[in-house]
Image (cartoon, rainbow, N blue to C red; front, side, top):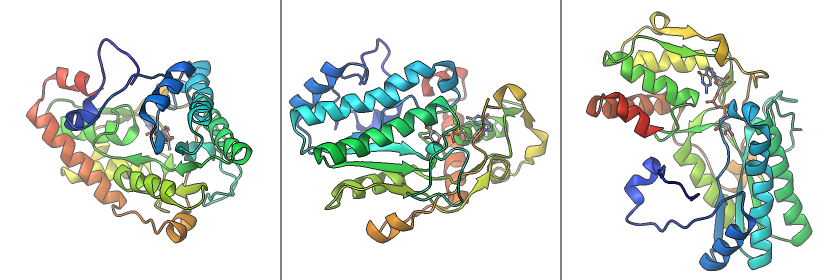
Amino acid sequence: MRRSSAPNVWRIQHLLDRITIKPADLLDQLSLIRLVDEVRPHEFYNLAAMSFVPASWDQPMLTGEFNAQGVTRVLEAIRQVDPSIRLYQASSSEMFGKVRETPQTELTPFYPRSPYGVSKVFAHYITVNYRESYNMFAVSGMLFNHESPRRGLEFVTRKVTDGVARIKLGLQDSLSLGNLDAHRDWGFAGDYVRAMWLMVQQERPDDYVIATGISHSVRDLVEVAFARVGLDWHKYVKVDPHLIRPAEVEHLIGDSTKARLQLGWQPSVDFAGLVHMMVDADLERVAAAPRALDRLSAL
Ligand code: F7E
């Protein structure tokens, strides 16, 4: 964890008595070398990144430092301390961006549409390069959007389910969104973490697309979420042009045949099940602590 005077641990609060947290920073090579040397893990999962796409236009260089060079630093730390450590690198469907083919597979060319997407392409190729240059067990999971009640409030699924809960409970009267026509292949994060682990248990390192194979629009998401609490979304949702991105990824849909055949992986939660799970969790959380402070502590 990066040192901070106000640690942000709300997602792992329930695990704190069972895990050990160590200091390290993707911007600091020495801290990573020290961490790997001290812990000597068998497996290293790098999920750390600047992961909010719109912020990458505001801070393109910092995004590259964390998401691209940060991965090079992780690879270097492993290479120097113990190259037999297995690395999972979190690649992203944002690498496909302005898609070259539909659905997207491991062989689909990349066309990123944001500094975030560009940084992830670098990270993907540097992972492949270390595997091929130094014979390291480094795998890259090309994961499509994966969500759960622990998703940050700035991402569209959670923004919608939190908004629905607040509107239902009378704490908010509208919800501002950007592009309702964008399509994503949304899956449940728990299923996708299982896929990460499976990739690292294989005999040989390889790259895999992880996706449900079904795509929905933001409009579909809004409709299913509002319907869960018996509301008509047309009465509450406003489009705010400030939330439209400088370049958009319009339509993503993944083909995870390789993962299904080689890892035996398949998703267990469908789109409606995921949205319902998130709306229900937000209803419960907001009803238990309806004050604005709760919203801040969740961020
Ligand atoms: O946007 C549209 C927005 O921010 C999804 C990250 O985990 O998945 C995530 O990236 C879509 C976009 O996720 C709002 O324009 C409309 O088309 O939830 P998102 P993302 O950008 O797809 C990939 C796989 C990653 O790797 C990323 O790290 O929804 N949209 N209205 C909106 N999006 C947001 N955030 N807020 C809106 O109001």
